[in-house]
Length: 122
Image 1 (cartoon, rainbow, N blue to C red):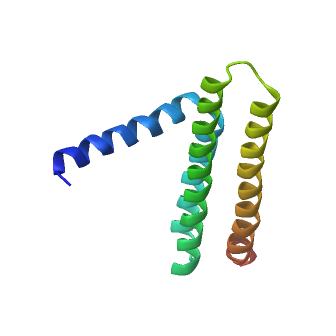
Image 2: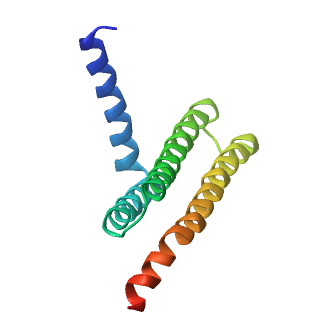
């Protein structure tokens, strides 16, 4: 692969992320929450494994939201009017992101709570 082509590809990827960030409120909220959680993971005395898991969960949620946004845009192109099948696909993708977010929240609580309790318990 040529280096020039690689940088063009990176530009396309950054433009896609920027588009979703500017146009999708859920992605912005999840990105901001991810940054805050990342800061807490850095400040609190988490183990390397816990930090790695937190980072992977943040990435999972953001990736799923990017996929959700791409599928929504694609279905809007294929069936511009809200067709029953399009609604079902969008609902399934929203449910996917919701389940992953709830799971990440539960795991996050399991990781952070002992450290927060220890911090304020002193």
